[in-house]
Length: 324
Image (cartoon, rainbow, N blue to C red; front, side):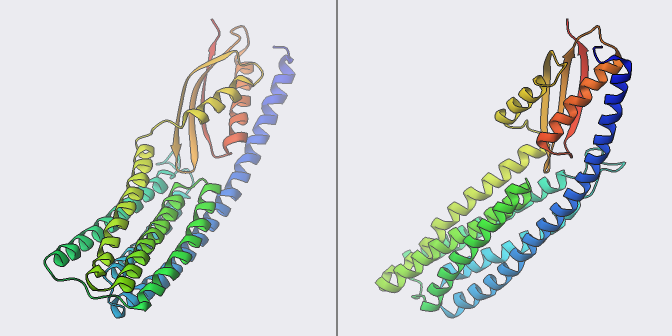
């Protein structure tokens, strides 16, 4: 070893100190992450509560089937916020004896549940819209909606888009699939209101048989909502099934490992996501003439390099092999 025995021991002690400090910093980051996740979700909950009551009132008194469907969709947002609050709290729990890789999968499971709720909301709106259209075809055209329904739709679009932008920005910064999924649930509500606005506006302006535009708008919007639900569900299920991280992320990991002093080559790089954290398994080839202590020092440097880039909570497993 070019460092000598004392140098290697010093390096190992230094790495242990850095590791302990990293764990302490990670705990602080986890606490801050939980607090911010809960804050944005509570804000969403109260916004959805106000929106739901407003749209239900406007839908009933404004005689708009599309607005009532829109209100039901907003109510599903309330339920998803509650699910997210539970999932974020469970996912933030630290590693324990029964969960060696932490509880990050709870966040993923929560995202799947939210995806199912989005699909359910979309299916419900599609069903009610189709039923109203069929009644109109039989001569039972829906009653023209009132202006209050139009105003509620416009207010909902603006409010829910602001809520989406805020939630998705926080979700991306915290690398939380649960928050991102919930943000898309907010946007699906905005999409619903866009269709509702078009349908109600068309029914109000054209009148007569064109009142059918109200349920037609609800049906069209339901397909956008179903598409969003499928996207959320697909991402969550892939993570639950331990799908590998994207190629671009794995390529970056490969470059980082190869850049560590003492690494000759690597193979069998395996990756997966555990909530907001990554799990990395890799075989690293080193000079076979080195001591076990030197090989361990190289592995520690690789581990620190990966955690520096992908977070102190990254799970890293390194198998050292002699270069042949």
